[in-house]
Length: 285
Ligand code: DHB
Ligand code: FE
Image (cartoon, rainbow, N blue to C red):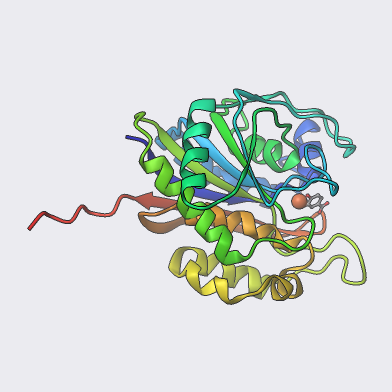
């Protein structure tokens, strides 16, 4: 049976792609950020996930404001990237796993999630940057991309995204193939790119969010979307992707590593590694 070995939260700021292309990982500006992935690389080398389910938000490459599903699941065997205008190299395509995608889609719809299913899907920097950060040698696993609308209000609630993740976690556990699955949530943490509060960052709130993700994610569901915008910034709502990632960890969760660095571009850049151990089976009476 498939199992979820853990979850990773990571930023997806496009300028990271430029730093990678220009090999600036050891420059003073970038080093405190990139070195935060060393522990993650070590863990990934030990655990060797076969597939990554990636929760992210599309920024206009695949969906635009005219048609924007709240939740969409890729069901392809390949996901291409295209030029988004950030001045970073177009990424090579990511491999998909359509069989797992369809299994997740069945599970989600059965659980009451009216998702959009995408047999063709472009992936933007919110997928390609995390893949490059997690597997810098290019040995990416196959992915199942799940996009969450964090762009056009009304957005789904924190509670709904946690539930979405749980439904994905349950569906993975019912997948008959013997594969190791990693879940990834991308974006955040606090940031605001435009308007009067451009440059807004909230370290206290980010720290609380990371603490609660392993300890008590349910507690975070008390924040409404307007409150989340206030506390995390207009684009800090990308934390919804992290909530879904956490929801998919249905076993016993423990934090293995975190890095938090300000600033990368105009954001607080966080990296979080959570292990997910299967709960002990209760003995039959
Ligand atoms: C930036 C942050 C984002 O989340 C994003 O999607 C694009 C750009 C930034 O800080 O530049
Ligand atoms: Fe973003």
